[in-house]
Amino acid sequence: MERTRLICKAAILFSAAALLTGAGCSAPSGAEQNAGTGAPAAVTAGDGTGAESGASAEMQTPGGEKTRPLSIDVVLKTNSSEYWGYVQVGCLAYAKEHPEISISVKGASAETAMEEQENIVRTDLMEDRFDAYVIAPLNPAEIAELLKKTDRPVIALDTPIDSDRVLAYCGTDNHKASGAGALEAVNMAKERGWKEIRAVNIAGVEGDRVSELRAQGYRESIEAEGGTFLSEETVYAESSPQKAAAAMRDIIRRHPEGIAIIACNNDDMATAALAECLKAPAYRNTVVLGFDGIGSACERLLENSNYENYVTVAQNPYEMGYMAVEAAVNALNGRAIRQSSNIVDGRTFIDVGFNVITRKNAYGRMEMLQKFWE
Image 1: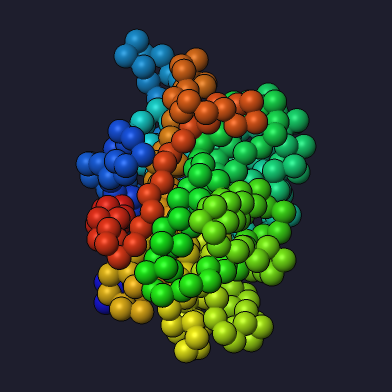
Image 2: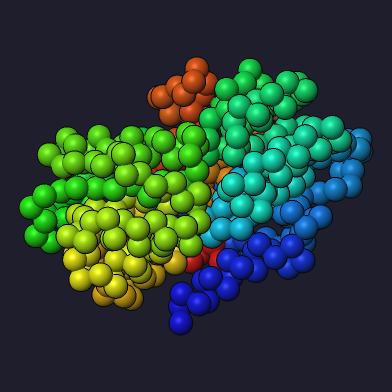
């Protein structure tokens, strides 16, 4: 099946000993232009935590002088999910296009592995072999403390970091994006016959800023449309599909009459929740709202009739990785960092945009994502 092909390719990306292949490796022209042209980039894995790409030896300038390539350290939240695989492909794509750049991409084993990620960042800072850092923090406060040890440029990826070392934040406007997704979910729930629009949030990691912003956007849009967001029943499933499934079973037990909307922090959790909804007759028309717009979720939207009640908010992870590395390189070279009109925490915000995806437009999203794996 097509889904199996996509998941297998994603698994290859995360295997530490595998060959990593990134396609679509040209500069994005905007948040909607994820795929580009050019031959696939092939790099070998590094020390078991990620991938490295780019020149490692000295390069020779036209004048005959030797110069060391700029070295960029990218630390992701995890390297064990499909979504972060797309981010990694974007990072490696920039390095492929710019042979003067050496890049190292690594991540923690899970989005709950805060201490593991902190140790990765601490070690990389101590080694002092990188010219700039791109970091997607699991614990922004602790990462900010660690960054006091460097004077190198830092770009925050996916989640802001409150540190003077951080020059820009590259990511999604999670509050705005989740609000748009919730609005679509409310409209879909009404179409499915729900008279009382109640929603429960299966959130990510408790205290995580991104998870909180998404929950806020969900709540505000649902309440603005006359619905009820059951904030007191929020469950933190730590981005785990297994925990999300268990949370959904508990929601069904507490509300055997059914709930109109289940709003989840990401697609992995949302698809697990939907599988549980399908087992309960009162939840057959429940609208499940995910986030990320990953390929496996889009494929299910297209192929599985049970996904007619599914909505996802698609981020642009390829751009996120590409543009974050680009920003780090621009900072090193004294060039301006591209930005949106917004400022987040007093710093430049590089907004990669979003799309709300349903069965109606899932094919275009799926077609675009598959170009990364060709």
